[in-house]
Amino acid sequence: MIKLALFARFEAQPGKEAEVAAFLEAGLALANQEATTPIWFALRLSPSVFGVFDAFHDEAGRQAHLSGPIAQALMAKAPELFAAPPTIEPIDVLGLKNVA
Image 1 (cartoon, rainbow, N blue to C red):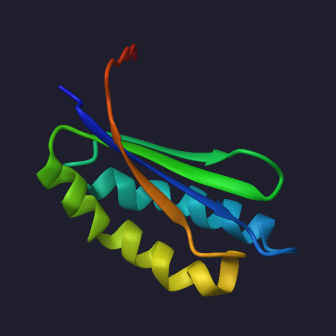
Image 2 (image 1 turned 90 degrees about the vertical axis):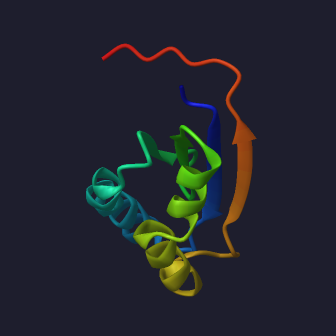
């Protein structure tokens, strides 16, 4: 059962919105390689604000994600793409409906 999640939120630097969107779209390929990340969403919350929501079965999966290739790529590109450092919030999942 999915019990834990993360929500990362970041604002693109002016003029970098398309680059942030493309970066997140490319992140899907990395997310598909993470066996411990069964749910991953890249989101556009407004023209310049973006987010990533991902969920995990356990804390080990969440920690593996936080130290994995997506997080590393995100932090490496942060100074170039984002107006401020990303905020990353741990979340407890209280309920989930998933219909494929």
